[in-house]
Length: 350
Image (cartoon, rainbow, N blue to C red; front, side, top):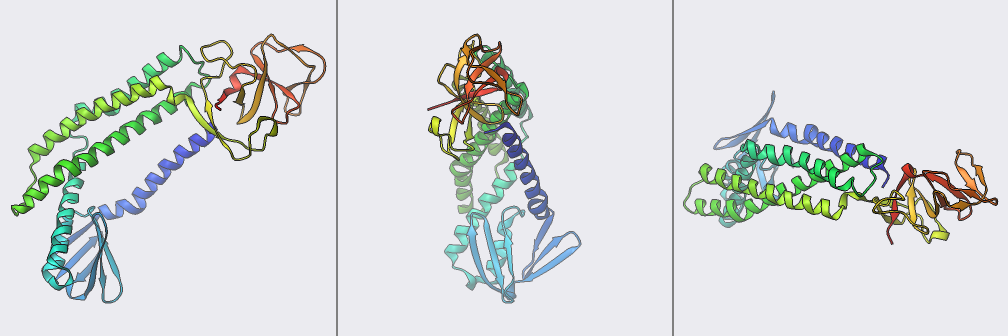
């Protein structure tokens, strides 16, 4: 994939993230709901909406902690665990209209709502253990960038250090987000949800803050260790030095079809290192162009002439490949280009 598309994709991700926050999530976070015996009051800034329990026609669950009430007027009001103590809303609806659902439906979903409410509260503790979080989200990515550069630069020529470090940063961020998500879900499902189920059997919703803090602290230590292992594996496998690219047009001589996705090994971007390109290799160079290596610097090829873009082309007379260049057969199967080594992106993997 071309570097500009990597950058555009990253920028698009953050634009979408902030758009979701400011357009969808932030208005919900500023909204509060009060539960009364006969109605709900939804307060959103200066706007106030009153939902009378007598006007509720039905209650429907969507998924997870999301449900909505349908009014006799046809209007639907949606609720989820982003509202504090969402289970109070569910209980208020049931107590005012016990015929609207069965006892089993009420209890089962009430348990889920309490579990999700506590899960939302635990997210507020995300950076409670500051030293561990500094190590995980600050020191670890920095060490990953430093050691990756020191180790990989010995074997691979890095032409664009900015793009290289940006990719490493995105990999480290991805690993940390994935491990955080996995540990968060695992703790919720296998530890905290079960504890809440047991507490509700004793008719108690009180959180054991000391227990939760101890579990979260230990899980963050495990996350730190897991992230270290994954990042070490990433460096050992050179995963950050691979990319994908789409073929722009049919290349019959190379047996490549338009739109075909190829894996590019970005380690093969030199002629005198651990991963040198060889004659016959299919490579990506410049702005996503594809060619086949015909000769390296010092080798002899056909007569040199200029194309419209200023590149040197070979035809009949024999000339030596200039220093710092390689001779590449163009995608048309006829012309030979002299490409600077700095423009070499990598070798297409079969």
